[in-house]
Length: 249
Length: 175
Image (cartoon, rainbow over all chains, first blue to last red; front, side, top):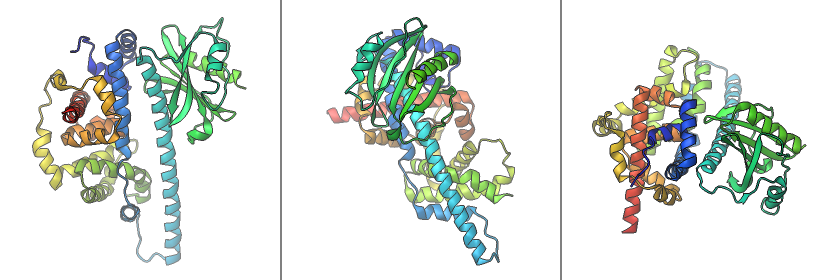
């Protein structure tokens, strides 16, 4: 059945963000030309997203949490009742903070994963664009009426960037715009969604971070959340992010 | 030993450890026992914890070792954990579900959960560490106390097993 002999383990390692830059480049190169492996990686992404839900399937009861918490927290004998109550209240407050913080952190990591998955499934799809155009004046109006917000695209003519197309995707169950921009051999995805519906706290500072072996830049502006993600150079991701940011001032 | 420091590091992992324990044992009461015992052991062993060590991997490793010495863990160890690590990864792929079938099956979270539950515990745990806990291969190697090469080969067989389980499920439904 399988005609392609590209190493499945190498595909998996690429998806896990565990391959070297050379191996990643080889995998990406291969995915552009092999529909079999592209379908394979799309299935892997899908399966992984569902499997991820297994990570929050079982929730401990509040009683059980208190039990373990009590076991962990030191209780010195003869501690005055008032001070103990204060300490308990403080540790409860700290616990709530930790939970909220951990949850935000998890949501944030989750969103990055989702963004990375969207980008990968775009690379993997044989016909990934709903609107195919290199003209921003075609792509931008196409989104109108399809998404509940508007954003601007910078002029790509005369730059190293090529506008490839766009499509509507779902990010955290909310409609988002994905614009695919080519630079050299690489593709970069720009994802735009409403900040309010993402309900996720992001660091507001700029800066490219590496997630799942991609370079990602994210920022919010006028209620919109932008992601720029791709395997292109950090500098190129940054440059595209800056152009977009300026176009949406 | 600093209990407050331990609490600060260990309690944020509580939900994840509990969820993982439920997947390992398949029973909420057993999972509670397991988590409680793991925290007690970790607290006791915290003196030997070096700052800068990966706390998450350390806690998951203690949870796992506690599980392996528990009643349900011993039963699993006698069967599941004896699998041959040198089996060639290609061997399992013959009964693999196709990408199209995977797309179909993954529409249902329940089907994926059921397939996970049907896997040997060694496969289930490595898939959860990788996909649900999003650990790196290095972290997983720390938790399982095996070389990274073993993580890669076991993970690849576990994934093939998961897809085979989804595929088998599919055949049953079609029939």
